[in-house]
Image (cartoon, rainbow, N blue to C red; front, side, top):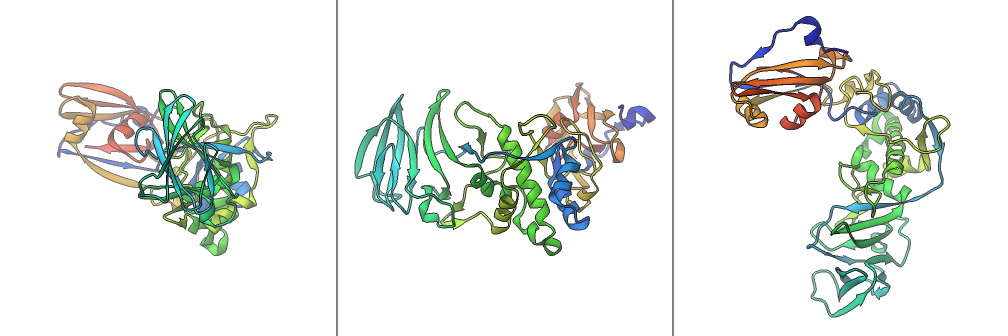
Length: 381
């Protein structure tokens, strides 16, 4: 579809007051589920999680899969090639038993050669050194419950604790810290980072459906990821946010999101006739329409509850000029939109012109360059 400006011959905005005012809708790419939309449908429309998922992920159905493990590349960096780990219970590092409360610095030295610097606790100089062939750290007890002392904890200013094992891996010319754990335990660290656990209490508990929808979407998305040869997925918003199980000795999982994960255990979204899960992308707020792509674009009335359903920012013209390198701004013209929703929908193409030239960009490129919340915007200068 062509955009509203192209259809109506709407005039090009001309620079005047030294500022650019941009109004818009939604937060994020708009593909798949809107998290705020899921909350709105759960609390205002009393939809079940299966109905929410069917709305956003058209053409899919729910399927149970065998419980799996997942490997997560952690963003933690403790020097160029090492990490310091402790646990309240005995654990092993490269096959060497470390007493409970003790700590070990695992340092990559060469292929198949890791140095262990063993100390009495975090922050204490090492008392022994060993060389081993593996950078794998494993707890002595499964950490299914809320006992943080059974978990492996990274010694740093956050003291993040993780279920499952940790390993230092050297690959592609760099060192990586990997957390390997059960998928369902991984989701306990994802769901409350992606959707507020407090949503579960909203509307007399109806908000739990939004957390359940989040659990299924996150499980489906993670199941399709093969981000690196050494790990399936990362722990940041570049994949989906994962915070581990605890920080500074306190659980950051939540009983409400735990319950959502348990209620949907093993459930993923699939296309008919295909046993493999779909990559169920999601974003914070659709602005009133999803953007389409892998799944059909749909109107999103639930998103009216989002604080970013409508937004507005004012940016100095000089900032825009620096972002696009076209000299003092003379016009910003939306060339085409997707035709869905207010103002003609998301911007497909936009031209930024100045005294030194002009550039043509996608709406997503324009939004990224200026730090906008989405590519659904209108411009006034």
